[in-house]
Length: 137
Image 1 (cartoon, rainbow, N blue to C red):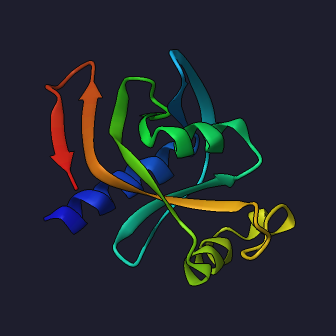
Image 2: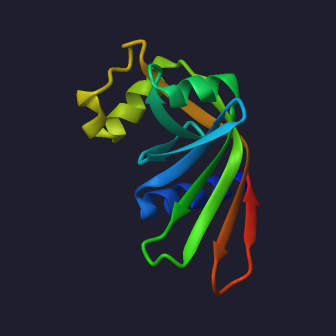
C-alpha cells in the first residue's frame, strides 16, 4: 500500500511538471520551484545543490511541504513530511541517469549534489469539485 501511495504521489508530481517546496529559515518560510523527483530503491527523492540556501534550510530542519498544481488549475496536491539527506553514490548516479539535463550542472561525486528522500509523508489531494483525499507513505 505504501509503495502504491508513493507511486501515485510521484505520478502526480511528474504530471504537474513544476512543484513548489516550502522550507523554513528560522521563523521565515521560503517557497521555491522544483521540477524533478524520482523513486529509487523504494524511496521518493528530490534533489538540489548543497551550496543553495534551500539545502541549508532542509539540513537544519527537514520538515517541508510541497504544493503541486495541475495544469487545469482546479486540482492540487499538498505533500508534507521530513527530508533525509542520502549520500549514496549509486542513488545520485541513478537520479542523474534519469534526468540527463541535470548532468551539465551536477556530478554524483561533486560534493554539491544533494539527494533527499521523503519520510513520514502525507499527501492531500484536493480540488474545487471533490472532497480531500489523503494517503501516507
